[in-house]
Length: 252
Image 1 (cartoon, rainbow, N blue to C red):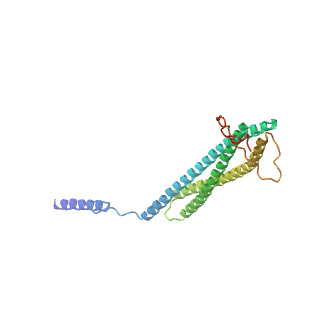
Image 2 (tube, helix red, strand yellow):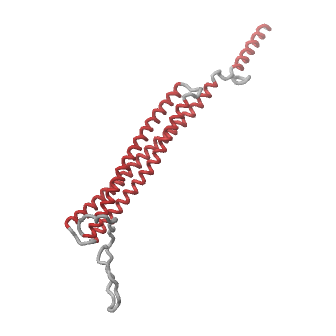
Image 3 (cartoon, rainbow, N blue to C red):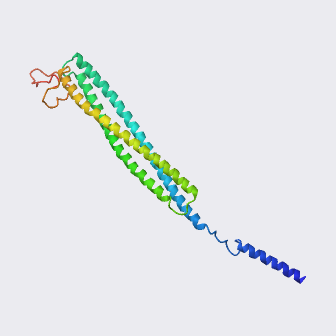
């Protein structure tokens, strides 16, 4: 019986020691030898998350700038259409002849001038947008450099590099979008600046025609013709004997 008790005690002691080695009462199990690699992978994944967030912000910014371009184009197109209608109406009236300084044509000329000014303002907005898009190109280049630098960070696994490749590809497409957007902006600005320059001269010619009441050539060697202005209305009737100054009958 004594031998059986001693054998049972020995077995119980062995079980306790085994459990302790596996994380029981003698403390936790030793960490695996690959823990350094896991720490490195977490670091790489943190950088990947930041790069992905930066790429998403870049793409969203480019999309917003493309939207602003389309909105400004729409505003310019609307003002151009209204301007062209006013100029066509003035030209048609002057072709058939009208009274010198016709107030109806003066009003139309003033409205046309306001529309051309609005187009000029729109071109200024396009210039500002071009500067913003150019900044996006620098951001995209910086992001590409960071993605490529992350490839050499130790502790990455294959999935980390696959994600980096996806970010690099997306950033490359963003750079192409930026280049395309800058090209569209430059072409739009050049086109509108040419239109504005031509129509400034056209408005000057129409101004001279309104003063004449008909279409006519601009005087040679002179400065810019006077711009039309609104007719000054005659004052109300005055009492007999009250002095009245000379009234302009039209646009001088």
